[in-house]
Length: 234
Ligand code: G3P
Ligand code: MG
Image (tube, rainbow, N blue to C red; front, side, top):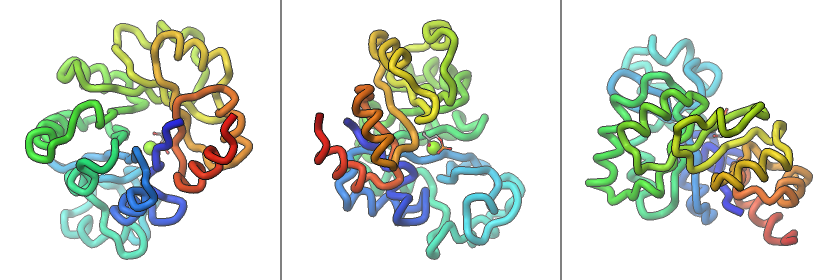
């Protein structure tokens, strides 16, 4: 089962920081999930558009910050809020990434940045999975980059999976651990989709998902979850 370090090794370091990503890499993570927000012509790694929700010292909306204020924000343990480019540099050749698009307006900045990451850092599209709850933005991304993998995030059990997928060519379905059942897993995998589940840290959940045969999980404790799974192979 694939384990994505959710916001890095965020159970042991401030989430979505270079420290959390480096720790995940040191622990041998094969994949890392991170949350993307846009500020002017830059992509930052930040879970929430409200800075006081997800940093130690920031206040207010991301879009209302001055560049100076933003640069001074402590995202935890003295870490600044990283840019996507910094993470792409840190992780190139070391792991896969799942870029979760949190904002509505990322593509004009994101797409050229990804093209640069391929040209200058050697990233392969297959190692950069783009996901979002914003399925229309994923459709727009796929129209621009038809060969890149996309993952649909949902937090519900849909009435009809095929109609939710529509015309999209979807690589993976990212499901909420609280809204998953064997029928949905079966249906998704029968359609050729990978099934990845967030956010999974508890042994009882790991056991259940192992029984359901999902393809991967997002964990805040990727090393601990991997250890548990390796010692409970069924
Ligand atoms: O991408 C999986 C998961 O991160 C989605 O929820 O709120 O933790 O970003 P959230
Ligand atoms: Mg996320």
